[in-house]
Length: 565
Image (cartoon, rainbow, N blue to C red):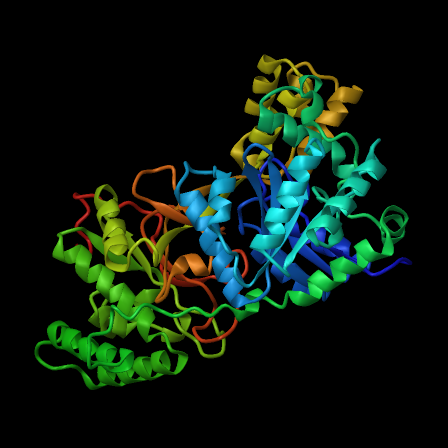
């Protein structure tokens, strides 16, 4: 589309829960279609949606800027947008988010001006979005402080929403910026990829504030301008110098999630050993216990074949981590049992991870690990349900809170929850909404049953009912909030909070990373790495590229279940 080049610097997705009305993928696709030079995803105190945006940006060939936004509390509140310039800046930003989230209850944070004064945001760019109700003195003080604190890497954001007073606000920003020597840059405070999402955005606002739409007042956005606008429209709203600054900022940011590198912890390898030598030693020690009369030649050949492939694909740490956890569980008399495709591995049998003797059955190791498939192995371990927490706390103690955390699970809207929230926002009778929601079952999937509306006395041809149906279908699959995975751990050699933010779980003594594990796995423990192959580039989220180290299966082992105990 015709128009000047532009990079959107201030944009949140539906991972700013109940605020953003578009998926990260939708925002990226729309920005690319509009011919944007770059798009910054800046969810509120979060990196939860950045992997999805990263994958979509690579697919569409759009430059993605990685950042976050924060609401700063104080006498004169304002919004702070921080963009990572490089890998070091990204780590600093993730660590800052972790600090805020760990100091607050699950799903919340608080950032005061006093806290901000102690933060340098090294290797990051800082963008200031002041409130329109700020006095001239407050605006001037904010600009002078920002200019001193972040000299040479700070901008004022100019937001034009086609509201009365836009011109006066821009004049005030230019005057305050010039006085503090802070440049201005155009920005959209984007909440949706297209303006037609405005009704859904209003519904999400009503849900967030807990009131029907008719009572939300100024909590609702005044118009639908907070979408990705065409470059022609932007040229009509912003002066060329404001648009040019967005490109300068985008050029200064060179970070990509592809730069992240995952490294396994070293604790599982004793001093003086390599992962390969230690795995070989404990495998043959286990083989001696399994076959006290001597290891059959066929089994020994299979052991050598497996160890060679494990070493070639660099999965040694993987097996050693599994072995360490199983060894701990059994030392505490916690029932555990390996199952699944790992039963095809004689190494797993020798390590005591599985109880199936591969020598007594026809097995195919390539079902478990294959060079051609280039997929990481998957070892399923069931732990005794009542004592699973002991295994989790063992990992926290061994690796520390800064290097171990559970993966998240995204709780998304399904028909029942979507009908309830949308129905309440639109002002439907609560009893009717409840009956309508209960008429949908989990096996209905992500579809809204039209016949269900007639069953509770709602006319499907009524315009208000049609609006309820349309908005419910739009919000289906949207993230509602982050929860904790039942046992999916991430362990790292270095600080985990410099790869992905960590926050408190709702359960005591548990912490969770902001990236999700989308697989529906109900059971025990899993430990996950952050990329498909150690040492290779790759961002991670289980929705795209998880690396499974241990996966807890669906059954719950109890004291009466002695198999594998």
